[in-house]
Image (tube, rainbow, N blue to C red; front, side, top):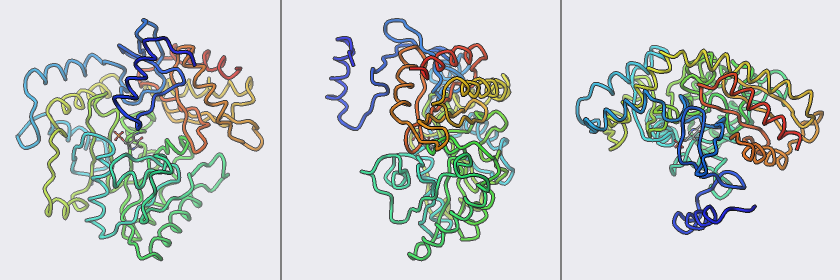
Length: 424
Ligand code: PMP
């Protein structure tokens, strides 16, 4: 791929200065200098439609969030060892969105840290160490969490205390996804016990993003949650991806499934770009942990991050962001699905709110995954000014995840560019 000299120099510098662990997106990397709403602008002033960003889910540089951060950073930035109104307002606001037995909020700086903390709490609460996840899960990068994040790559081995279950993909495995998922979780529990390992938690991303965005049929988690509880473990809903209204119908992905988690972990869109994440839990779940160890995290819950998160919650409610996610999401799903009649390579299409997935296949009958074509589609769209990515075990599933302020007009542009890319 031809890079212009300036970009080539930045790529070289990056490799030299940041080392080998970082990855760039796209065959031809992008260099953005500004963002606004659903748009990102590169150094040449070209604009790109951001159909991938679930961090700035209210749109880039949302004015209310910018204002809240600016005001707070110019006033005071301290930590959770002092009294502060905003963290209390944030806790009340978040806890009002979940079932009433979840009564505490704890804050971290990242989703990884939130899951790490959830695991520590789960271990103290249950006396176990065993973790059950789906086969292509991603939960984060700490030492403990990377041991239950198989998508980090084969160089990061799963822990001996970790068991994986098949992704609950109803469109591939046929009906009875609930029965199958429950049976798989029960088998994982039995296998842990056979190895002398007491289960601590079942943790799932409640829309199964890295497993391929498995949005249907909601309701299949119930039996698995009952099974882990019966075995003495707890259920953790990782809401880093589906949370904060993305699915349109519910604030949290687990609510679509009609289950009550013991811990809910939060991240990405929580501060619309500010590093704030955390968890919600019941008193009895965290009681022993809290009585036996203090929890202080220097930056987590600082006044500026809390101001950002409080502004996000306010805007979600005030601007009826979930209604937009539901309505525009339904239109997006309908338009992408309609492309199936024009492109044989488009396999199963599914979604919930503004979270849509489309399989790219070489054969619709056998649903044979086409990773190479998926890569071509993603890069062709980038060349035509639209950003998306891919997920799933074979990286053949288009991951369509725009900011929640996406409009029907944005959908029309997106679909035109996708239509063209699928024909390549
Ligand atoms: N859980 C899920 C489901 C995620 O998608 C991610 C991030 N992609 C994380 C946890 C980790 O969050 P962070 O990158 O903020 O540590």
